[in-house]
Length: 260
Image (cartoon, rainbow, N blue to C red):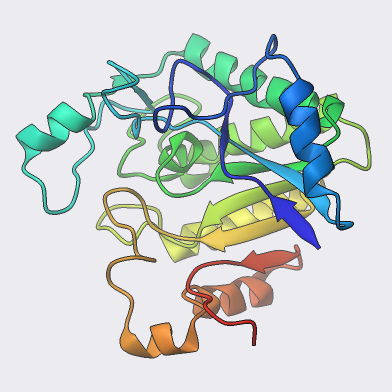
């Protein structure tokens, strides 16, 4: 089996919530070594999910989060003023910020390997930073990282390549990817299929976990049909499309409540 941790942050300045676990260049590894050992006690692979929260940093831990473009988060059911108090207006990332993020993901993956983990899962779903680069709703850049679908996925592909350069050949590299954002002007299923093909073409990704939604639209929690809930697998329809489009190994998440 496989044991995947919750998201470990690559940058302590931009947390998804208070008391997040962070693994950076100078972070002591003792506790991470213990965690990896515990994950593998029953023979499971130990996979560390690594993430950058992007614009979805609460104001309690970050006064100015990062985003590909200066697009404020709108929480469903909350007035904009209240959302603004909970999550601050993000600033548009500079080229220096982008290079820093690439390096941080690579460092965290490298240190996870040093701690005894068998692999990492790069979190590129749910509206976090890498997911927001994929979406035309939050990525309105006009440089090498925005505009066309190819440019919007460039950061994710760079990070995958940089991690592969830093870790051993047998180290597992997974990606968590939205099937779609489920919001007007956001990341679509058609684009997600193209990202899957691009990840497969790198020959560096071992598996992709399929999910969906963002903080603005958590499809897995909000608008699922009764028939889908009964079937349990929220993203099965997309997974079938993905399997027809590419051969990369897929993992399905969302909605499972029974072992059968």
